[in-house]
Amino acid sequence: MILEFFVPFVMRTVLFMLLLINLAACDRESNGPGQEFADSKSGESGEPGESGKTMVGKLDISRRGTAMIDTPFQAPDGSTVQLSDFIGQPLLVNIWATWCGPCIVEMPMLDNLAAREKSRLKLLVVSQDIQGREKVLPFFEDRNFTELEPYIDPENGLSFGFGSGVMPTTVLYDAQGKEVWRVIGAMDWDGAKAAALLEETLAEN
Image 1: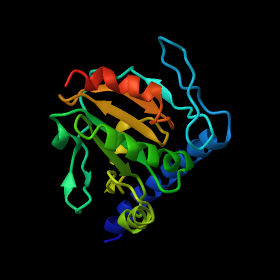
Image 2 (image 1 turned 180 degrees about the vertical axis):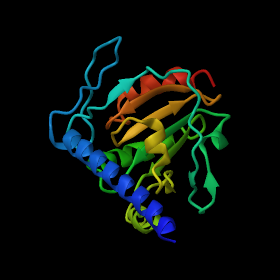
Image 3 (image 1 turned 90 degrees about the vertical axis):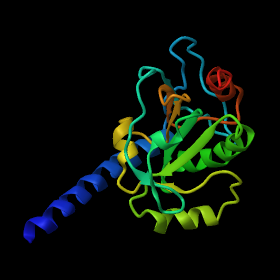
């Protein structure tokens, strides 16, 4: 009986501590100098986003060609899904949380992107809030998103699977479910750089 209580308690405590670490990373990105957004080939820096601050995410192509992680999370209707359910077209997955400032700055831009590319790209924003629907649904109710839907991952399976240690992290998969690139940190998804990065994959489908 004691063991049945103790194990979930320890797991919750570990999850909470990891989220605090993510929060610290998120705050550093929002308030400090941040990372430069740089392609290892071009070395070009990021562009200002609509917040007026530079979107300083870092492009990472080191995992290109690897299969998507297959951890379960919740669809907007409460059913259980996994990334492999979306194989068949390019998939852009953004992990975020309601307490992450840079994540919230990105959301309207991601909504715009989802609307622009809805015929060529599926875009998922998956909350890592451990409070789940209790926290995320009011957030969506307060916004007028046209395309984004509240996917929820209260167990943080995607955060652990991606292993970046930072939110937001955004991963692009091709239509076969293979990773193309990821952006660690915030990015101007309305900008020319994002469009060019996506077009390489979208043009093939």
